[in-house]
Amino acid sequence: MSISHRPGHAFRIRHLALEVQDLERSVAFYQSVFGMRVLRRRENPIRNDIAAYVGYGEEVEHVSLELYQFRHAAPPVHENRGTHFAIAVDGIEHVFCRAVEAGAVARTQPQNNRPNSVNKFAFILDPDGHEIELTENSHGGQS
Amino acid sequence: MSISHRPGHAFRIRHLALEVQDLERSVAFYQSVFGMRVLRRRENPIRNDIAAYVGYGEEVEHVSLELYQFRHAAPPVHENRGTHFAIAVDGIEHVFCRAVEAGAVARTQPQNNRPNSVNKFAFILDPDGHEIELTENSHGGQS
Image (cartoon, rainbow over the protein chains, first blue to last red):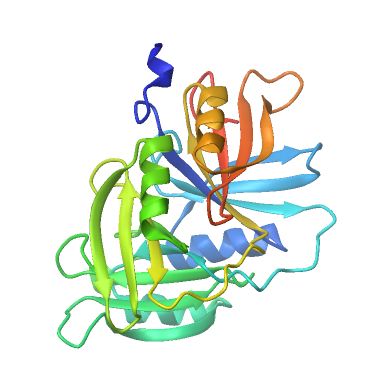
């Protein structure tokens, strides 16, 4: 059995793809609110879409967001229940306000995870309605 | 301005959350097909859900999947257009077959990205209908 058949050997969560209606609006949003960098751009004539990969660190090592826009956009899909992604932040109230100023919808105000927790969360919708959880933890990765 | 207000300083894409109908079925799927480990489990009485975080490497450094199941499940949502996530794999045909054997729906068979590309992709739906792109690249992170 070749090395490529051992589960877990070379697997990596590579990107999360989000369809957007206005690529430059979305790139500006993730840059200005979340400090992401544009890692690369691509154009795909077969799919008839354009995309920008944004994130932190090198794409070959770190997960990124693929923001993609069809040339002939389908109607926006606001019904996306059951999927969201989380960004760990410092200063959750500040980031939350910046996001809303930048066009996000406030879904859940920053608050403690549980009554006895020092960690906080909030929910926003990005300019296309994609749900983002903001998390701020006082000690490490637990919530 | 405190350190916590500098965009990009402490940001990290932390997890992608997927609602599932049967947590143990989903844990088994991501373990057996994609070699993910269970990083932790949690129960949230306020949300009335249970969850397992699965992925590769430590959760404080690497993005993970949060698989969560409500105790009183809502009807499944199969309309989730516009969002998917990608897993880089070795041996895409083999992984694709394993996934289908494990209950995934074959959406797009493994094929070259473009006529002149040596890289490949495929699409499957996980047991809850969440869309997963499989990618196999011959040289690094480009597609």
